[in-house]
Length: 356
View 1 (cartoon, rainbow, N blue to C red):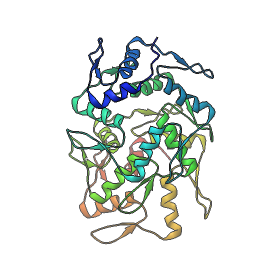
View 2: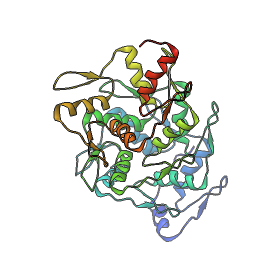
View 3: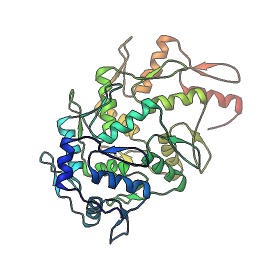
């Protein structure tokens, strides 16, 4: 069996020699014998430590100790800045880097730095193009085994991570952690320029590009640039015509998942976003945000030609076409063009005879 326990001599050896112990199966080397013994359990599949609550097995004793804290609720490691507690010391160490900004793990290809070693390992595989993990259902490939595991839950419908506040379930633990911040109000990622805070690190990264003006993602069809990769992916569907999100009630398809979610509320009648001044409710959060400007008088979007201001960015974009003469929405029957999509939709009813 793979029971192992490090010794003082092995710890001393770590300081005086390097990579003395080699795995005879994959040639990976270690400077501590106990690390080699633990590593060999990966090849043998042996997991000798078993949880007496849920029967989950682990290959190292310390892993079992940490796992049991999930059942007991024990979180012995506490952040002295925000008092958030953790089951594992390494998670506390990583968390503290959110406060300090420290990113000690640096990519030697592009110099991007990370707060966790496993983030760096995942990132490096992007440079080498290594995507060794393949889905046996749809053949999509991944550079990390964990991503494949999470992806497979899309096919199986499994959602093993559940919010203990609202009961919402997720197929990835990281999504549950992010979701919990909606309940707790925690926003641990802070912009060092304007002090705006975020509950997701990716949102902070994207936000910082507002200050820097950086748009690292560009379309290879029309050369339009974006500050967020997901915006580029959605934009490309304009060129390809792809609409992967389909309503199971009326079969209408959308290129954005959020558009499908909002559309479904037309069928259900759900309007979860409510104005606290006049109680008007909306299917989209953006609709509520725009509506509130009616009460406040705020018009944050201003035309740089005539200085006319608008409550919505889309209204400004449509207005600018008056100055530029652009009419991007064209009727495929008579070729008449319009500045707004809604105008095209209304016009098309002339040909179809449809009455709204």
